[in-house]
Figure 1: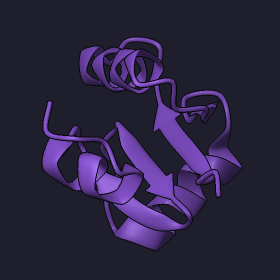
Figure 2: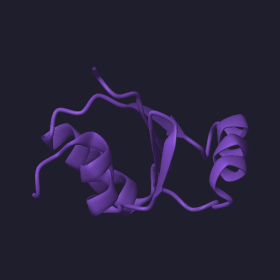
Figure 3: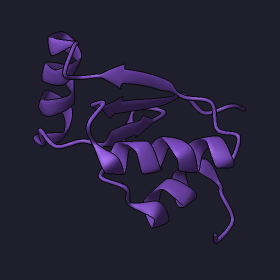
Length: 81
C-alpha cells in the first residue's frame, strides 16, 4: 500500500530542497505544501507538532520534523542509504 506523504516547506529552505530531492531519488510520491503561502496549513503543522520550523513531513499522518533520515527511512521502508 502506498503511503500518504505530505511535505511542509518554504521556497528558501535548503533542508526542504534536500528532503524533496531525497524523496524523489527514492521514487516516493508526495504532496508539497508551501507554508509561506498557505497560512492554514502552517497553523495545522504547528498544531500537530508544536514546531514552526520546516521541513516537516507527515507519513500517513505521522510527523517527522526536520530531515531525520533514520525516521524517514523507517516510516517509508527505505533501506539503509
